[in-house]
Length: 438
Image (cartoon, rainbow, N blue to C red; front, side, top):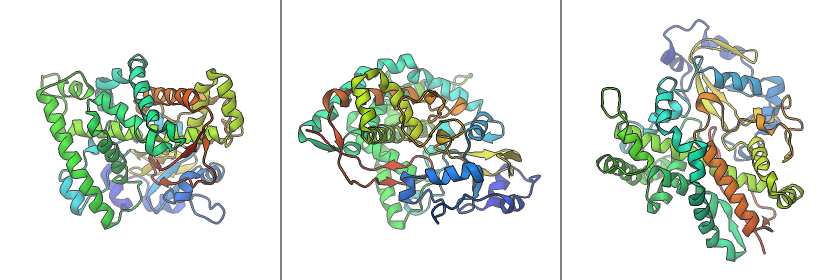
């Protein structure tokens, strides 16, 4: 755990409100069923909603001493944090933890994710985002549909005759990484390694469960060849550019003609695209499948009227946000939800909580594909850090469900299976979804 005083010193040499006083006065998350809120508990990873529902009523902004972070839960409060870049900096949104031992040897200059777009504030954020924005705009994403459909069909071909599958292992863990790697320019032969790299990166961030020495050694063992490959890939594109996103990044220039991004920065940017474009979409499609198949009457409504699919997927995003949260740094003393947060504090947006805020959504814990105000959700964020790949994720989900309806219309959940997750405060990993069909 970080020292609160050292966190404070990073942002200011003299805060106007004593950190210790604020911590002492801050509410804690309510206890539910005799249990404390624990985002690293595998059970709570699947169902954290009772804790944040209680928090919205009793402690809308609460302090977690175990992680030294202030958590924001209500709809309007989360919007306020996301809207105010000047007060809430994104510089620690996905901060890599301190690396030691074999991991420090693989990343002697720190993990490349430190160069992620997610960690940049305006105006630097806007400048870098403009470089790649057109690749993820609606018109560009529409051009990817044939490629997405071809890859999705090929994955289904591999298991359709079996009558059963693990949708995560055989589909949702594969399609998003294949698609994003195609856009980046990474060859198909490397997609499996890059998908695993994206999952491993999430384990190396603050907000991930502690790692054992054995886990650190295994992560380092897997990271070394991928890191070497990525550096060689980027250097190769610098010398021989092609029509892909990596080449665009490398060809960008500053006003005086120098390369805008170093190799390490491009590797970090690729890494951030992978974790954002793979982990969230993998969760989105898999958990949406689980939710819709768990409500057969609504699944049948979609079968009868395909025009309901788009709204149904938005409702799944609202009910089961694939990303759980993001961090900010308070750049001044600020009061949110009646709680004083001192300058320099780490602030965690619990983005899954406002999607079920009962002051915005009626009967918020219920799946309702006919929900009239589902467009008020912001599972992909808002404003400056609105998810760059939101249009792409929606395309992949829509194509997936169109193919499920066409090719696996009577698929159903295997009964009594366990919902397993790798917990994480940013993007937990949904591990398995067993399906059957005749």
